[in-house]
Image (tube, rainbow, N blue to C red; front, side, top):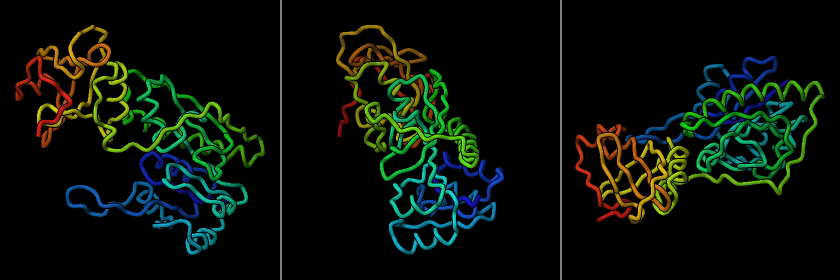
Length: 313
């Protein structure tokens, strides 16, 4: 079959690579435009574009996809099927109806749970113990189309979004190829999603990383995991911003106000929360690297009784 692949970040790379190893022909790739990155704000190509260029596959990077020019360019590739993984935009009807076999999406959750742009992050934030990959036929909704194949994957207690995404991405590539093979063989029956069971996983913003110390310690520990590596969980110690990269919930009770540093030893900083205490294990401050609390305390004076979360300006 002639396949057009639409995807942008690292999550989408294994899906494209799996298609390139398959019996079908990837005739074109669509990715988001290059974006400025880093302190120098130099334009950086998305990971999917780099893989496509190495494979000699033509790439389109439209600023807008709802234009006659883009639809004409897409049509010129004459795709039998469009495969999508984390492209970053909702496809409208003319694109969805273009390929005879439809558009197949690789989604990083067990649909109908966690529809949206950040399914892996929200699964970890919410303390789920498993997630997975769902392939589906796309419609104009946000991850609402009929499901094709689904495979589960355990979320380990020490997983972060950053450690989970690569494993899910590899599973997504394998499941995409299997989905297309079964579609070609006519052995796959699309299954309607139960909208009543749907939950949302909206795009995360930088401000979502600010720690609310009135939450319970287990919820905050999961939030630290789910927000790693981006946008990262953070709080303020006076004027200094602390990025918290690792933390463990403890059930130990305290009457201290949430956000109060209750105890400090060589290995940890215990902070009162709305329920239990959060044991901070890895911290980063501005212009420094991530470091274990034992190393952090060697260069920072931190005393019990100080309040976290209130920025003194």
